Image 1 (cartoon, one colour):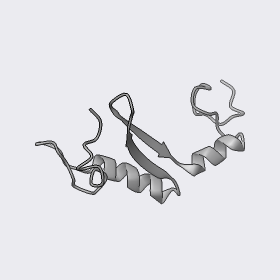
Image 2: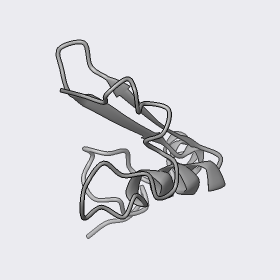
Image 3: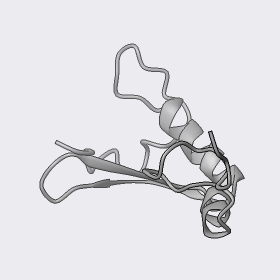
Image 4: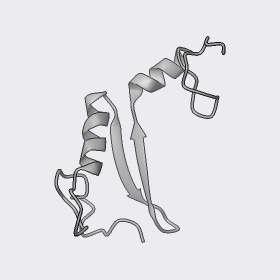
Length: 84
């Protein structure tokens, strides 16, 4: 069903949870970690249902662009010149 629009602005707040046994730290920690690295974390509803979580950490993007590490799907996250 995605994210309920009535709580959409609160889901990344520390200790916010809709679960009886939830702690409310997961999404807020993801957002804090991304921001501390100059990136961002966003949640959105998908048009066909469900939610989408997007995380961007520029330090990793910069390393891929500079060919320091391999991008996702290109094998392991070893340095680009690494040979096994």
